[in-house]
Image 1: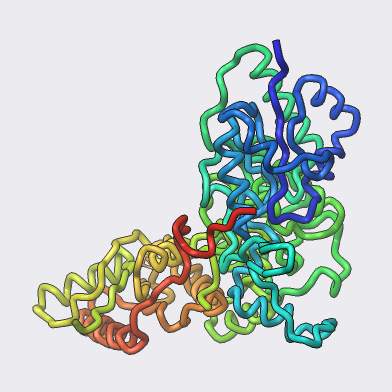
Image 2: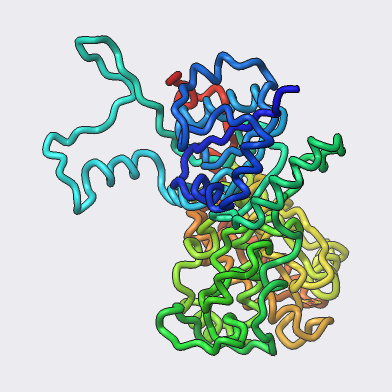
Length: 323
Length: 149
Ligand code: FES
């Protein structure tokens, strides 16, 4: 019997997700033992045409990382959807936009204008801007089109499962991939569509070892501006921590290391917007019933939008800033 | 046709909803632009409700609760009071005018005040114009979407 086929793709991403797959160390041998790796641009030389030539649904499992920000990302999302039985949104970018989706605070024109004309580190004497099509003596060359809005994978094609994280933690990748191997090997039923693999349903606070008491905050501060107590809840110390609005599964690594949770594991299933949840969470620790004082305390929160939606702008309720 | 604002109003059961009822039984006139949603307490209004209302086409969102100190659940309205300015700050950063959202205290006996609040807020939203969310839905036929590589 031929082996089940595995594909791994990166769309708009940093490559960290691919590295995290290598980070599963010797377990990678079990993966390539079980699967026939047919497509992984980061690690093997293969062309898009080779994928186009594959039969529909011939790839058993595709781990798709990266957000959808260009026509190329979209084309590959559609192509891999067509060729795969199971398509997994792997990592925060594919799941809810992640760092690439911070571009949704701006629009296409302002981004291109800044990058090609205004950025201080720029040397673009001719004021050149990339064109989707250009004529050269050898013919026409094209580059993908740049979208106005960054999308998550499930906004453009149907997604079967999600593995959250920026990047997903290697132990969780092992759990998820081994579970898939087990399912395929033993003909077990697949989990319901939309299941989040490699994480739990609770919030990051659930895994956090720090002690929680009653919170009474008069001002918020950035993590570097304060020496924090290693055993106390960071929120209680006036540090904005996204723990209450973030899915657990990472092992609360950041908070254990003294940094607040930044929200990379995305939304727990009972929440539909990280920003809205953070508004509630922060409002409940503010110690005041005087509107003016409340306003003052709120103004000490550094960049609410960028902090609350650092990883989930594309997947949030409003998806982008109105510009 | 002239623009008629669509406003979602979250009214707390114990004060503001009763206040709205009073305005009704007293036959007070006010603009019909507010769709009232009864919640048990202004503290029940999750900021996600507000974002969701805007997402689904509201031009304005009004939240009414008991006066501070009068909440049926003692401090629900203080919770609301702390959430709303932060929600407004977030809305502003999201490119939605913060004045599209308003928090007001209306007691069960203040039918007249309810009338005033609704009238004034409706006019405020009318002046701000319709809220159009840009580029919310993914359009697979849009020109930028396709280009073979
Ligand atoms: S019951 Fe009216 S605000 Fe709480």
